[in-house]
Length: 177
Image (cartoon, rainbow, N blue to C red; front, side, top):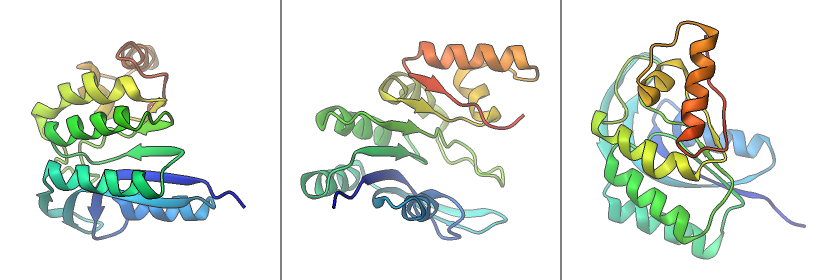
């Protein structure tokens, strides 16, 4: 029996409403064996994020190698990547292992409003990770940050999707609105 495997590269959410915890629950519900690369550890609940600890790029790379050299993945998804260096190492590992079925969820801000991606990392997201994506799934505020557009009308949202595709993504699903 062949078991499909998916890898989540994201932050750990102690409240389990997002991050690797939510991804792994989703993978399991879909009958997929889920693995993870943790990029950051957050102390959060349904109300707020109280603390964020970003892991080193060396540890992110080592987790990626450990999973890929033994288990592998037919698909992968990114979530909270926290900073430009983690985006760079993630993109490098995706290219190194020639991974194709990538979903990029450009997690930038928690529902509570707390920042989950450093502002200087947005360019790395645009230039390094989005070009590798089969699908990019920003919400409206994330699409605004990626495209530097204010999105209030359908035509503007459609233009934002075109701009994200121009960054190299195969497809875009803008959530919300």
